[in-house]
Each structure stands twice: as C-alpha cells, then as structure tokens.
Amino acid sequence: MKESFFIQQFKNRYIGDDGAVLNICAKNSVIASDSFFENIHFKKEWMKLDEISYKASLVNISDMIVMNSKIDYAVLNVGFPNTLTFAEIKLLAEGFKKAANEYGYKIIGGDTIKSDNISISVTMIGKSRRPVFRKAKIGEFVAFTGNLGSVAKDLKILLRGGNVSKRSKFIKPVLRDKFFYKVSKYITAACDISDGLFKELERISEVSYVNYKFLKKFDKNIGCSGEEYEILFTFPKKNLKIINNIAKITRTPVNIFAVTTRGKYKSICKENHF
Image (cartoon, rainbow, N blue to C red; front, side, top):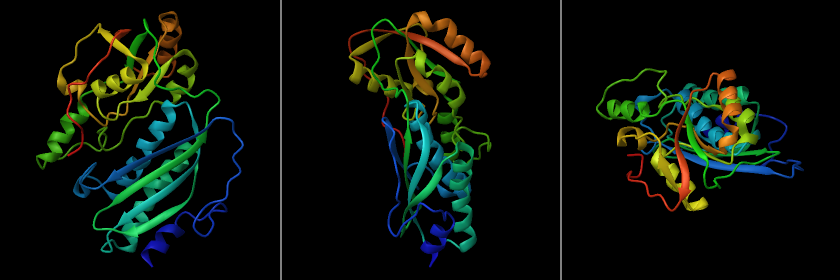
C-alpha cells in the first residue's frame, strides 16, 4: 500500500504498468544514472526526507549538466523502511517533485521496494546538441567553479554529531547550469567534482593522457573534498576572455589553477563516502 501511495505522487500520462512509453528522436540522447544510499552518502538524522530526495536528484542533474544535456525525464527506484508514515513518504516525494519543477523534467516512473534503509537510484534522460566529454587536450587551462573544501569540513562536523547550516553544500549542492550551458561551446572537457578535485583530475587524465602543471597548490582538505558538485573543466587559452565574461554575467566564480601537459596524473585521495 505504501509503495503504491508513493508512486501515486507522480501520476502523469507517460507511466505505464511497469514502464514508460517515450518517443525519443534526438540524435544525441543522454542518459545518466546515480545512486544515493543511507549510511553511504548520508545519514537520516542529518537531513529531512525532502532534503534527501532533493539532493539525490541534484547529484544526477549535475551529471547531465556537465555533459551539456537538458533533462526531459527521470525514472526513480526507491527503497524505504515500512516504518515510514504516509506523511513521511509524501515528504520524500516532495523533494523529487521540487527538483523536477525547478529543472523542467518529468518523473515518468520507476519502482519501489521495502528496505531497511532509504536507498535511491535515479536515471535521467535528456538530449544535447553538443555533448561535452572528459577528453582534454595538451596546453589547455584547467579550472573549476566556486570554492572547494567546505563540504569536507561540514561532513566532519556531522560525523562528530554536530549540526551544519541548511545552506551547506553537503545538504544542498550549488549547480552551475546557467554558466555551463553558456560556456559549453568554448570548453573541451568537463566533469562535476563528486569525488574530489584530485580524483576528477585523475579521471580526465586517464581518458585524455594528460598531466597537469599546477599554477596554484591545494592541500588535501581542498583537493580531496568530495560531493562538492562544482564543475571541473579545461579550455583553450584563446577562450579565456569569453569564459571570464560568461563567468561575470552569470556571477560564477572561476578558478584557473593548472595547464594540461603530457603525462599521467594520479590522485592522492582515498575513496569518498563513509
């Protein structure tokens, strides 16, 4: 009964019996999927239920943004304990609906299951006229948006039993969609910083066979801070002026910190989560 009640929160014309019927004709269809599990990505006492489902949506939206994709649909797979009340289940659904309304996509189905803990998997479907990948080139600037390090600090506070502001990026990631959609045609490679700056640099290195000459140095507290969801990107030096202009127009802090070189880069960070 509770599972069907949850599904009823998202009624629309796309949902079938156990699937959804879509007519996708876009040349560059983009699909992204991510999971968000209690005691791995969060603890229930840290966040309200709608904050949990809202963040679970945002981390997937972040993946779509950095591929330069606009989102059309989302499919949810959600496990939750039978101890949740109907009011709590409705609150959990509210976070999913809030994200869908803000970013203009429809939730078209999925599945629910009884679980000891809250477990969420989100699959998003969209399209892109010009997808952006992780393939950087030699001699490019390397930059990230915003500031890094606050999430690691807040996570330590939470793990010690303390409280953090509801404005913490651990609770509510700040996505840079307005900046990225404008800047996408002037950059070469991009990814979001989900597992820390150093780890994402390693991922771009593995795909692109590049190393980095650092113009600025970062300690591990900054370079290994995960779940920041800022954007890491590379771009040709000739595009510096226009990227700075877009950053100014969209009020997006941009930090240029390295240049790509030949070689290979290895992260010094441990795996994130707890």
